[in-house]
Length: 79
Image (cartoon, rainbow, N blue to C red; front, top):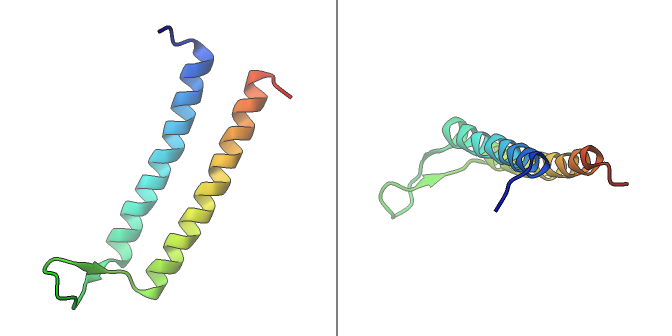
């Protein structure tokens, strides 16, 4: 299977967007995650501020992927 420049660009841009999302998840986990009092040993809880940050990250990710899709369509010359 030959990977041309267009497909390579799509892969790189999409992968970069996903990596930004994963970095955001790690940041939220490190910033807001704390040991919980749940009966499961080693479990963590997310306080309301962390939950709000997570919802915000998901919304930003959806908008980012829409922008990436629009960029890729425009870069391909499709209208």
